[in-house]
Image 1 (cartoon, rainbow, N blue to C red):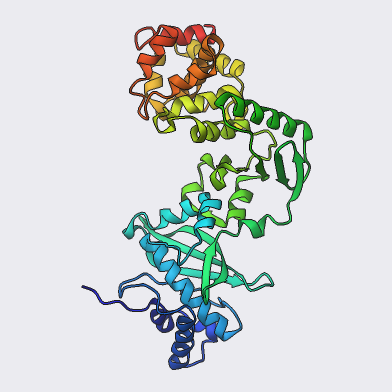
Image 2: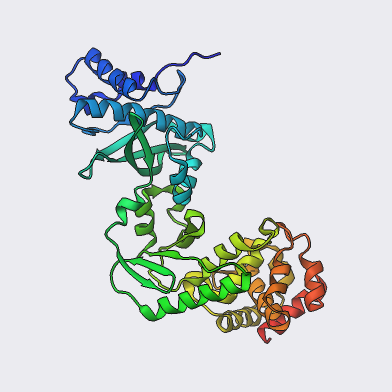
Length: 406
């Protein structure tokens, strides 16, 4: 069994001098950090091979030595827990984990593989916004073929708790000066100009989808950011290698158990991602939903993601693809999943939208949800498609031709 030791003492030896003035003796620094440990109620849970944080040149937690020692002790324990994938209520409030689930998913990725983070996390900067809280920016490194590379740069908001500090997303702090307007039961938070017409259209859709799914109307906070970068920065995700060159669901998603919708599209009416998240969250037996059909329903209701291409446009694109390649087989393309696209639109999502349109027009929304509830891997998809539209794998290609008007 490995004996427990304190990360904070490791910090005293290797990295904390910059934060405490550099010229002070090791004994002085150790005493100061011990004071922080006492304030936290004891040593951080750690082991002798724990990855502790380092401090960048000039990084200072606080000019107040007692505050700096207490904050350092809490930060060391928290970052060690992040890297180990063992964050607990000691470090983070359960309420904050629910309110900012998007942020904490990104944090959990850091500890998803113990060997994926190299060296100690590095504190780049820290400052207090004028109260007893602190905004602390930390870089996490990961090995790459060309040497260590930056994996994530995260800003944490530290606040006093139980004689030490807890940590959360800076989202509330970063969005506190956004403008607010209430339209129906949706409260918009935004910067810059605002299009009330698009907002009213979104509110009308929200009421419609609530009625279709059969859930009571509920208030919603809609955060509209100008760009994906602005959205990520508000959450405290300064840089994320996984989100560097690829736009994922960060374009729009629900948070805070569905009470918040956040988008980086600068659009008051970003229905596509909202519909997808709403259906996935609120439909009965949602664990059985076939993801392509859920996205297809979202395309049906809200057009295709950032392009905004509606179904008539998507059908025209498919007809053009067919003209360019008459040998295309839409069943094969559907089964390729994300391995097939037309005009940068994933083929299986568009075909799912075409099927959704046909089922809703012929049988109604409830039957479309029944089709979507075909199993996570679509194991019942073709059987249920045959029941609704009379088509299984045989005849699938011809069905798509009919749906696009080819």
